[in-house]
Length: 288
Image (cartoon, rainbow, N blue to C red; front, side):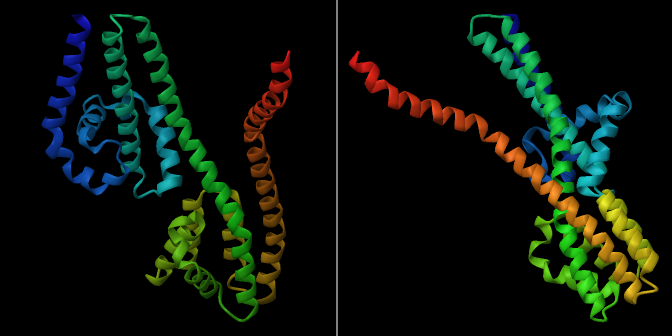
């Protein structure tokens, strides 16, 4: 009986909070609908964040998520996406608690399910936070893999008499179709747009460095800023030296990815070997 009351209370709290705050968050939800988990109950999750002032109560967690969102989404949208991700965590935890109570009711009041629900809730929360680390690492690896080719293109264009700004723009124009699939070219496209808006080249390079947030891009932007006015052979020589180190880092990242892929194949290979072994041995065992 108590568990059924808890279920009703959970449903009422979610439903009432949702209806009460629907208009408050309607514009926000419609803007980011594709990125929000279960938009139908999103007002409840966002209301929890604001009513309980989680930004002040959990500063370390919020700051960790926010810093990663700056890298993944940019400084302008990082605040909104931090809130969306917190809403995702709250929605997931609420659903886990709700279904844990449902399973207890269906199982005749086995309260051990509460422990499993609590453990699962902790695992879900931990996974969602760590998932951001994985996305940040994938973004960094993608940039490191693409950067050497981009630098080589810039070297060829500058050697042919093009300015650095013109070389970057031509490289971006050649990859217009893949901008949204490539973190590096997405950020370079933003840099080209700022140059088109007459933002100073120094500011554009500083902003590019900040938005990318990786050491390799920082070295590239520093090299370009130090030598772009001098131009010519000096700039090309500096970029060639940088290119060598970038290709080495690309090889390292590619090798690590290959090792990770091979390690993931270990269990399937063992499973297949066991299945083949059973198929081969079973006829001999059946005779006996």
